Amino acid sequence: MGTVSLAIIHYPVLDKRGAIVATSLSNLELHDVARSCMTFGAELCYIVTPLEKQGAIAEQLIAHWKDGYGRQYNPDRAQALEKIRLKKALAEVMSEFKGCEPVLIGTSSRRRDTSIGYGLLRSRIEADPRPFLLLFGTGWGLPADIVGHCESTLLPIRGQGEYNHLSLRVAIGIILDRLLGARGGEDERDDRSH
Image (spheres, rainbow, N blue to C red):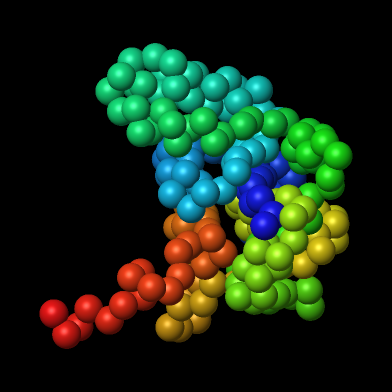
């Protein structure tokens, strides 16, 4: 079985008009994504931002929970934040995979020619020993040159209607559940009879 890691890209990403921009990261993003990664067994989550001040704030926050008072106050959160790594560029993330280049899988709120379903990717992860790296774009998504390096992209998460503007933190939780969550047995039983 392959490992699954995430890269949350804050630069380069698109804005509403399609221009390349950098987006800011948030305290909630770090905590929520770390907890989702811990819950579903994702290997690591790379936060990609070249912005020095953003990186410094994130480092301080992580240090508070991993090494400071936060570790005593909430050890579970400290454990989850061990999953977070800060990088300045996607190239730095790629250099972490020594000896075996990861399978890059993009995410998007739009269907693409390279889109694949969750069941198919889940089967591939279970059968392929290579590492998988899921790329998530902030803002209005990943630019074409990053998507072009991906082997495929996941189908967008769809709800009941046309509205499709989930927060990144929520989308990551849904995607990790679909790819890595427990299936079958007690988890799928019908409790309506009780």
